[in-house]
Image (cartoon, rainbow, N blue to C red; front, side, top):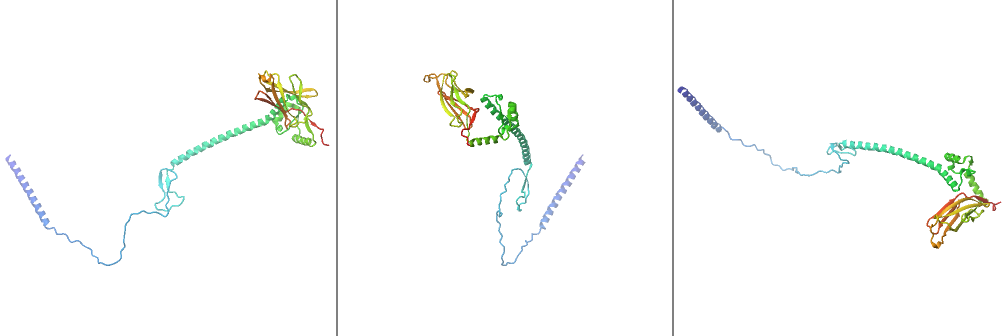
Length: 344
C-alpha cells in the first residue's frame, strides 16, 4: 500500500518536471526568433523627367439626353402589357408594333359583340317578316277599300234616292274602280243583266259634255222642286225648266213650325211632274220643344237651298232658338237639256 503511493508520487514528479522543461524551451525559442527578424526595405519610387507640353482637359458632369423629335406614346386601349417589341434607342416606323397587350379581354368583348350582332340580325329578320305581314295586310285592306268604296257610294246614292236595285233600269259602269273584277262581280249580283259595259265610257261622256257646251245646250230641272206644307199644299221653290246652274237654283225661305212637340220641324221636299208628286225627302230641323212667348208658339225656321256645279242640291236648315242645324245633299235630281238655244 505504501509502495504504490510512492510510485504515484514519483510519476507525478516526473510529469511536472517534463512540463516545466517544455515551457522553458518554448520561451527560449521565441526569444531567439525575435532576435533574428530584419528591418523592411525602402519603397520603390518612379521618377520622370519634367517637360513642357499640352495635355487634354477632362471633365465629368450630370445631364440628360433628348432626341430631335419627341413623341408621346399613348395607348388607345387599356390592358395588361405582355411584351415590348422595340429596342431602346432604335428607329421605329409607322404601323410597327411597339407593345403587345393581353388579347383575352378583347376577344371576350369581340365574342360578346358578335353574339349581340347575331341577336340583332335575328331580330331584324323577325321585324322584316312582321313588316312584310303588315304590308300584306295593308295591301289587302286597300284592295278591300277599292272594292267596297265604289259599292258603298252606290248604296248611299240608291238609299238616299229611296231606290232599290230593282227600281234601276240601266247601270253604266264608268270610272277606273268599275273595272276591278270584284266590283264588277258585286255589281252583277246586285243589278244582274241591267249592267251595260260601255267601251271608252269616260271618253264618251267627256265628248258629250263638250258637245253639249259647244251647241249651247244647258241642263234644266226636269221636275218642279218644292215643299209640302202642313196643310198638304205644295209650295213650289224651283219650277221645272229652271236652268240648273249655281246662283240660279238658289233660294232662302222662312217657315214657321206649327208642331214642335218632338223638338223637330220636318221639312218635306218633293218633286212634281204633270201634277204628280214624287221622291219625297224629309229633313228634320232642331227646334225648341217649349217655345218662349215672344215666338207665339211658332218657331221660325230658315231654310237655304242651293245647287252646286256638280248638280247636287244642298239643303241647310236652322231654327231661330237653336244653335244646332240640319243639312242634307240630294244627288238624284232629274235633269233635261234645254235645246231652245242650240246653235244651228
